[in-house]
Image (cartoon, rainbow, N blue to C red; front, side):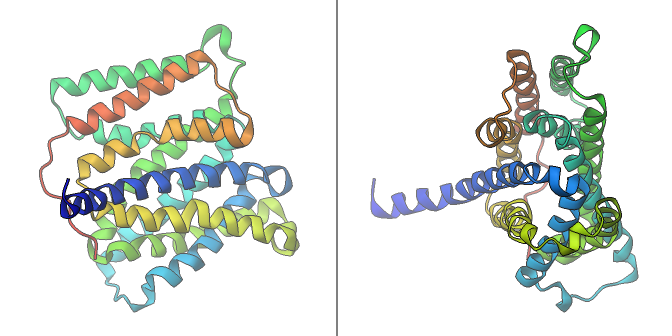
Length: 296
């Protein structure tokens, strides 16, 4: 292979590598967050992550230079609420069920958006796979005690907010590009930081020992992955991006095993496999109407 071809191949693999780092970073951040739930609870960790993450994102994207219109405020507000609700409910789910299962259940949100945007016969196959995966994953019948039902509801609720995050994020991002995430994070922090403060109490503000961990969570779960995703998103076809994102439930399960000693059963791994296959299938068979636009 000539030097020029080797260099071109390396550059084509770079966004894939960045996206894999992004997904790994998010799951590592979730694992780190779970280790301090016993100190300030999931609401407190959510509050600190959103507050510190917003500060970092503001420094990166400098959204104060943007000009806002009245018509853009509604999608931005909906996007920010969706972002905050997704983070809050996901951490609440993590406080009750294993990381890999929480990610898989939450992933049904964007998966539903992808599947129900098409009406072709092949899409019913992916729906069947999702139903099968949920059937294996959810505690039904004699296995009802294996997973906390409240944790399951939190994870599914996070999935609903993730779906809304995608829908409103597309509308909000049309005018502001990559800076949209910093604005959405600010809206989420304004809403959910007080919630975390009320539920956690003074420890959220006055326990200085939590600051380094909270900063690590904000970097791993917000600043680093969001920035890398934006870079990858502008350099990968939408279909490739979606297919790679389908690996996130598996990465979540592996992160839970490595960092939290959360081992899944064979049935739960089969459930994750069904959901991952459905996500990859729905992405690779999706009709691409337009090329992915570069975010300015």
